[in-house]
Image (tube, helix red, strand yellow):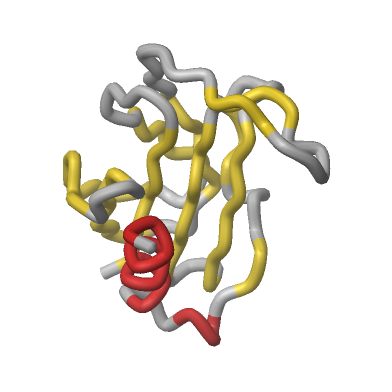
Length: 124
């Protein structure tokens, strides 16, 4: 139940009804074997979940914990952004940063994590 509560709190931190499924704002930086899902209100708010496991094609999966860290290349409109990396199990903020995107690609480095991580990002 804690995982469901954390997911609910994560989603409620957005104007969820204004968002749609969107993994396309991540241009590169995630290994093709890594599972990820994104949602956005393009230009305003972004959510991303990254999960490392094997299987999961409609059935069970095996978590593959290791030491992970990616440098994501994001497609973002110009502006100032707040990004928070979240531990999905606890809903705790692992790291936060502010940056200015120039209106093309933006590199964003994840903090180190072992299985999964979520990104909450808003344009200011």
